[in-house]
Length: 127
Image 1 (cartoon, rainbow, N blue to C red):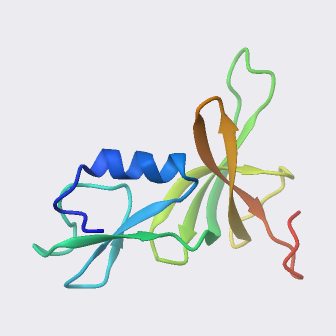
Image 2 (image 1 turned 60 degrees about the vertical axis):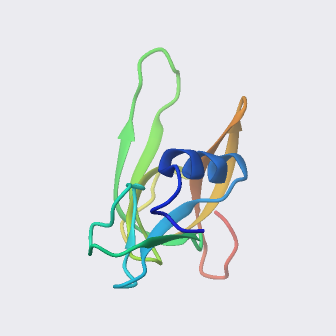
């Protein structure tokens, strides 16, 4: 699917509903970008949509306490295998550290599907 001749927000939203994290790749350079945009950040070339592998490494973490919610959110900058960074929630233990490997999973909130990540133990199991 080409990224330059479609509704960027619409395609990304459809991906979320289908529990697919879509990224854009510049055809000329092979570089990937996130958050989706109508134009490439890397060249004047066309873009295509690709599905993220769902694996990445934690770059930085913070514990966000939102009043009246009762529970803190663990947020992390995650560098996906494709090279882009995404800010997302990490579920599980609150002692996630930079460098840890994480894997994409999904949480349903009403009609919406939200990408979240879980840490992976050395043997490949989720923590």
